[in-house]
Image (cartoon, rainbow, N blue to C red; front, side, top):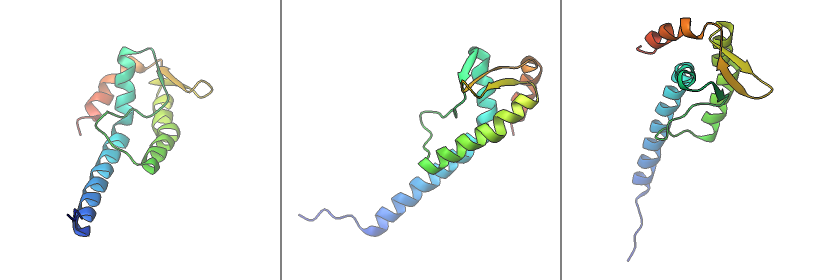
Length: 112
């Protein structure tokens, strides 16, 4: 019995997975600042790593890009606005002096 799968079906499955991964990546990237603020509502300190939900799938390259963007754009913007404090030595994030002021604005911006 020959249980070969046609190459067209394999390609289609790979394309669907790649499209799903790309969609997850864009969502995760777009929502990082809000996810950081939301996490800090219940935790005093969080790790300075991307916040990814269990159902989200990223490739290795996407994850590396996400880490870069988080450290060199998203967290710096939040720190400049006083929303968070970033400790690069310990790789942690805590609430900034303006955390409670900025939180409602960030939540409204998430409704886009």
